[in-house]
Every structure is written in C-alpha cells, then in structure tokens.
Image 1 (cartoon, rainbow, N blue to C red):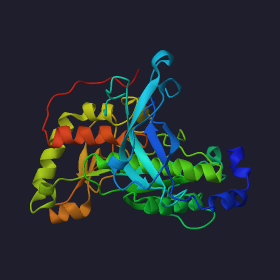
Image 2 (image 1 turned 60 degrees about the horizontal axis):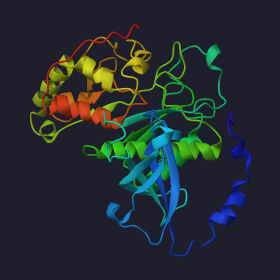
Image 3 (image 1 turned 90 degrees about the vertical axis):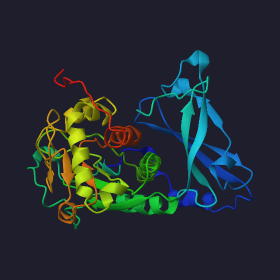
Image 4 (image 1 turned 60 degrees about the vertical axis):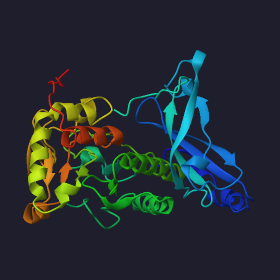
Length: 350
C-alpha cells in the first residue's frame, strides 16, 4: 500500500543527478533522536574533505522548538557527532553521522534513560480483520502468498551492510508483512548507535518505496503477535566455562528488579509494552517475572544450546520494538554488572 506521493516520482530522473561527480566535497547527514524519544531527524552539511574519524566532524546546531526539544525563545540546540557510518544512499565518500543533542548550556537534552528489533511494514496483503491467527504460514515464509515486503527487507539489509552497521540477520515474522532484523554483537553503548542508525536506514528505504514502517509493540490489536526488541546479553564470565552460574545469578537479580526494567523497556515507561506483554502470543505477563530454557513465553529465555554447554548468553524478551536501546543497555548493566538492588511496583492498569 503506497502511502507517499514521493514514491510516484521518477527515481531514474533523480539518478542522473546522483551520478554527477561531487568533486572533493563530502555530504554529511547529521542524524539525531527528537524529543519524542522515538522519532528521528536529519539534515545535511557539506564538508571540504572526507572525515576519517569523529574528531574530523564539526559540531552543528538545529531548531529544537520544531523537534519537541526546546521553547521557541531559546531554540538553538547543539549536535555533537557521536558515531559515523558510510552513507548507503549517497554512497562513498558521504557519511551518516549519529549525534548527541545538547542544550544551550551544553547539558544533554534528555537522559539516556541489545540486539534485536522487529519492523512491521503495512503492505497490501491478506486483510487482518478477516484473518484467523496463523503463525505457521508467515514466520520465515517463502512465496508471494506468505512473504510481504521482502524487497524492503532485502534493501534494508544490504544498505546496513554497506553503511557498516553490525546487522546480524533478518527473517519474516509471524504476522503478514512483519519482519525482524538483528543488530549485533556490539559492546556497551555501541549497541544503541548501531540500532538507531539501522532504524534510520529503514525509514529512508521505506521512504523510497513509498511505505511507512512501524515499530509499535502491538501494531495490530487482537489475536496477533506483537513486536519486541529481544535483547541478547552476555559478559565475558558468562561466555567462559561454568558461565551458566553467572547467567543464573544475573537472572535472579533481574527478577528482583522486574518493574524497574519494565519502566526502562519502552518510551512510555511500560504503557506501550502493556499492550504486548499479555502472557499470550509468545510473551510473558508484564506483571510477572519468569525464566526458562528455550521458553519463548518467559521474560528471560536461556537458549537450549546455552543450557547444554553451560555458558553463553541469555535473551531478555521484555523490551519493546520501539525501545530506547541506550536505556535497555543501561538497565541491564546496572542490574547485572553494577548489581544494584531495590525496586518499586508499578500499576499498569491505569
């Protein structure tokens, strides 16, 4: 289903201009997260030469009053380059630059309150209202009657590889036109950089195809699976001999701080995830913590091979598809590595 008039513009006409030489100049697209915590913004500046490191990129600014990040009377915000990638749309030597946002007083515009993300592409397919919940035909499906939007998923995958994003894989998911892509492995905060750039690239690819991507954790209500950002987490000790003991210790700590993690795992502090984490459709219940080997209905899944080899990683299945990966990383580090304790209950029925 085409949702953008720009999709009807001739791409071949555009290409004749994109094929023009750009001389020694370089286009750097600065990208940042807006005040909603979910939206992405971007703008481009010309550089005199190709930047080799982050230090070669100048700081910039933008109007924060138009992005929900400042008032109009004091609207200038600073863009501080944080991570640089190759540009798969304009191609080398051009760059994508993920930026941190600072306010006029050079303080962060928002607190940073791991590896899997799911995308849902609303293409023409079987009408959802008339569908009986059938996961078997669509999950990892092949064929025009089972896989909807593969062109977009393939384009996104290749663009991420070109950009240098640590994309780990992709597959069709259980709902028609629902696709998953994996990002990682990454260390620490780099996880957030790579996932946000992967999301930006997906939005841009969908823009060219004239469709809209949704990261909503429950894009279709009713008897359908939601969309999570399942996060694989491990430390060096977990991957070594008898690492399962370290994994089990971390899971025990995660259970004690369940509601702290629920609040951190979606932009609305748990309200978005409450629509997804119902205890049905391969999810745990939002108000209960659980763990198990090869159990996709648990909060924490220990992969079967990890259980057998007694070392490896665990999967936190609670983060929503629209989560802030920096917040997810921070929460896991605080609980599993800094070993913080304590939590307060949250009522999600309101």
